[in-house]
Length: 237
Image 1 (cartoon, rainbow, N blue to C red):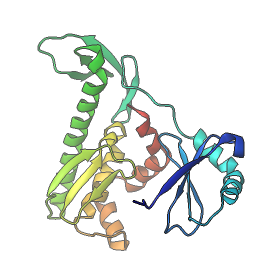
Image 2 (image 1 turned 90 degrees about the horizontal axis):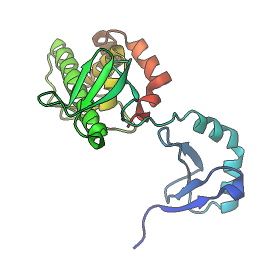
Image 3 (image 1 turned 180 degrees about the horizontal axis):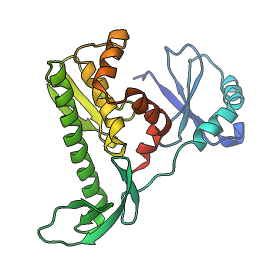
Image 4 (image 1 turned 120 degrees about the vertical axis):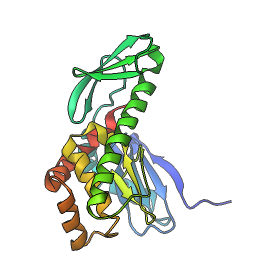
């Protein structure tokens, strides 16, 4: 049984770089080099007929670009006691408060995220809390903006998406990255406006952008923030 992809690694000894994964694909027409903005992992997509030597030369040619992209990958921040995590764009310190009978799993107050219960459950409880806040906030924004154009989303949900901040299906389902709850309100507002606009305009033509701008509080500021800081939201957890 054959698969459409084959994998091997170009080693540091060969190209004077950290290891790069090579993915050969039968439909690839040229060499492309990409870097995962979360992990810093790099890979080359290559046509089947391209030689190993050509791939190594290609990676060497873009060595400076690769090093620059990897340098931009932020360090991971575990969701643990003492960590500083943004919420609605503002820094909050995670504080494990131990067993607190009758208290919620996470209390959001005074610039802190106070997590109760056993220490080994801090990350899970905090993640669940952030996802719930994201779902609540983005659902409210979506419903309010959709009502302004006479539409109703079929469903609003959140996930830990890797490539998109939001999406709108042809059936009217809106899906958002839960990490938007870490971003400033203007960013959440823009992404909600973007996806709600797709309920009426399923494209990115002029009519879509006019509607998106009308629905958003400040479309340009939201876009610019994501371009500059969006990747940093993926470092938490």
